[in-house]
Length: 426
Image 1 (cartoon, helix red, strand yellow):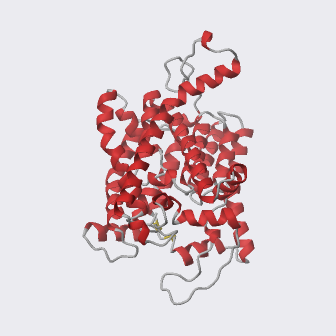
Image 2 (tube, one colour):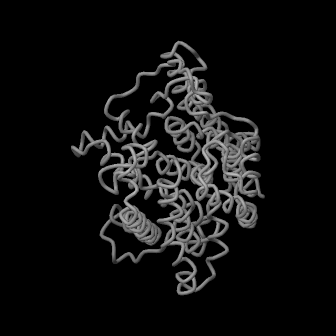
Image 3 (cartoon, rainbow, N blue to C red):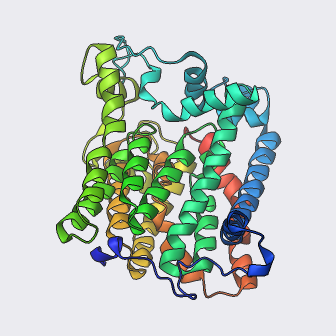
């Protein structure tokens, strides 16, 4: 690992991984069109490939839903609906739709008679940035909460894919960047990328914040981390990664004092501000955490529940809390692959910001009491895991690469979509 690489300047050599493709002067009519054309040339292959992969996966997902019809037997908002596509707005999605329509009313209301729940569920457990954007899109387009949520997620996923491409391009070149964007679209748990979920928005903010650190745009990185703190509590990993990278730059005086220091000072306030607001409205400064534990049974336990569940799954015991055999086995497969993905990432010599962000994202996912089958979704923000594999695959011929990825592209509609939404609880 090279800790200094987070503050290295980008190469301007024509063949460097981070260099934008050269454009012919006679094909552009002015500076604005030239910049736009260069962006299209640079990002279109990655975004096009990502969109194709996601469209195929979504089609397979909907075909599986229509084939079984099981969603018709389930409650709306809990994996069911009148149409197959309604499933994309269930579970967390129904909460985001309610917030977009009605806003928040943070409360801690005691619940009795349930061994794992002490408070009623409340929308304050869900951070506000995504439903704010849903409401904005709805006001502009006239779409309802469901349609607005899908629009925000799809656009955010494209921004995320572009950010992943940009980060991977700097580490492994253009071809690796395109492959990394595609792999993120095939990652277990990626079914939420085009659903009424906030995951795509969070990864978009995280990927571009890491890119800004890598290109020494400290204030922009700090602002993106601040905004990410309004989107998900797991933004703590991004906040720490940006802050630590900024601290290293500050100590080494590679970028002066003002910009890294500013980034450090502004990163946490989105997260702190929302948690504090919820606590103030509830009349209990620890209200947010009490709600997460008391209503959703989510809390840090040092990985005890994860280890216990791993042992239950691999020994065939399915009597633990929220056991979902198919998603649980997919989670086990991902955990088996995780060390290899980390080794491949290490071989690319990633900058400090990517190491810290990836490590803390993994630690957060594995050290919490949670639905074990959702590990695939909780690790979806760890996009650098796709980069090492992408760099390893970049030397394959296009035909070989297409053959290698053909089955995952088709299967993603099952393992990343149907298994997550219909055979588990995302």
